[in-house]
Image 1 (cartoon, rainbow, N blue to C red):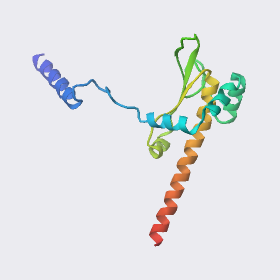
Image 2 (image 1 turned 90 degrees about the vertical axis):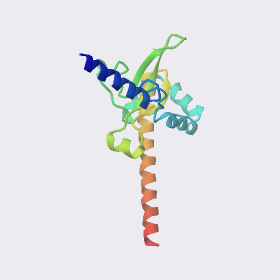
Image 3 (image 1 turned 45 degrees about the vertical axis):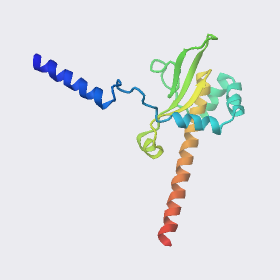
Image 4 (image 1 turned 120 degrees about the vertical axis):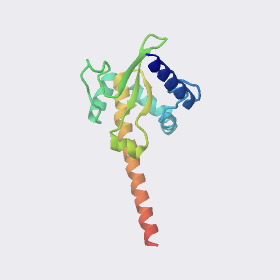
Length: 158
């Protein structure tokens, strides 16, 4: 027992030194923090206002047409993949986070495992933004890869 206790203390001390005395994950930044800022810089407040101006029913219909994934309510209370219900606001209403987790191959291409698209007042609005923005992000990645391949071909030919 004494040997196990000594080993456990050693492991804890080594871990503490390797993290600079902080607990695991302390000070770690999310890989997608800059992406969220970039998303808000790209999309003006008018774009956000146009989504929020839609009724939840209209936003839900548009989200489904644009590819939002409905899930069983017992698994996710919001009803949509990537939409997470957050704590209630001071005004009394809940807010919903729009988080997109691309598949492994897309995450490798994008260099990110999660993209955040803000907080929304209704789950349908968050689902609509995820559907639109996930397509846009992938299209931009495809265009960048195509441009890089064309540049590489030109450099090889020269």
